[in-house]
Length: 298
Image 1 (tube, rainbow, N blue to C red):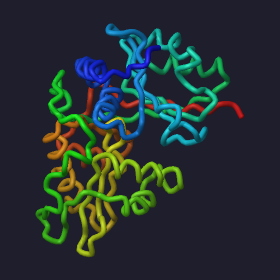
Image 2: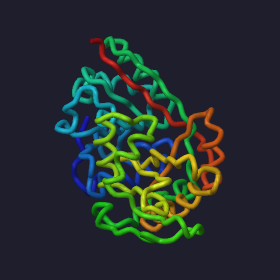
Image 3: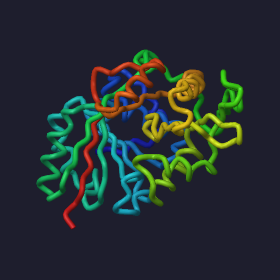
């Protein structure tokens, strides 16, 4: 695999990946943030260049210092020839099979190669499948890349502190002081590793909330380094009142203004979330969201 460092090559890759949306979404969204400040210190590997078949995004080595940190030890994969992924993953320099890690992608066909190589290395694999949601925006991105190069924090934030339809609530950018609240409410959080991850997401990527009368968040959402909208939550007393819909209206407006790719995923059985995201203009993508969590033998 070749390490792609040159900014022009990364931009060329980004435009090329747009032609494979939505299957390429995980990698496409990751490369977007790499091209805009690379806040999580990720890197891109391709099997060949300029013609490529497989792209893998992973954290740089200095980031993967905790062998059990699933928030950091993450790989995103897109392949035009998923049946050949097994050959790529056998390369000892691509994945650290001695760590606990996750592989994410929007191609179910990646699974066969992942499981085969994992079995050969005595690594246990847990699989998760979610419904992938997108908007027309993401499907129409094509090969355009109009957003300004640089970090998200440099770009400013529209409608900051703007009032919602309910004058008791205000839309606002989240700040790191909100991290513990998000961590306590996130189903995948409630630990020190997740808190550090949330702090980093809020500090470096788009994250917003609705502030209640006392100035504390009552609903919020954030983005992860693959451009997926995550951690969305509404406090119980503000549910079924359109609070999240108002939040998403402002949040998505910002993404569209800056041409930041976005998408989200929902558990198949979570009917309430399905209704909510559809009400915000999302629809089910023609492919799904897939995750393979790998546990080496201890």
